[in-house]
Length: 74
Image (cartoon, rainbow, N blue to C red; front, side, top):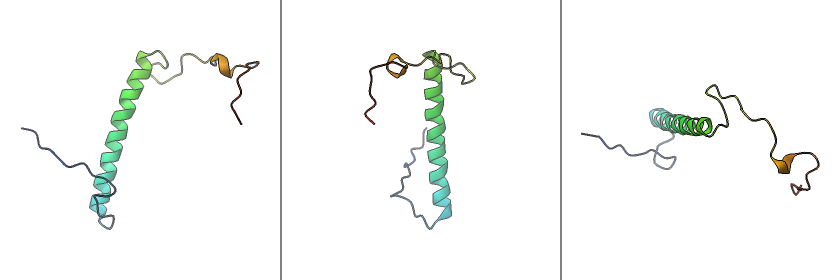
């Protein structure tokens, strides 16, 4: 049996209540940690980084290399 809990938002909490602020912060940090873990796993699977987070390919894309005709518009 799962218990469904209502997601907290900045609009749904009382910012004068530190317990509600803390609960929202815990939720945001947990969501961020889960997203980071998924993105990290995907980057490893794509061969962008290794398991320690080190960048595997340090070459620049062709449009960023010296002599490229690409203009960044700045």
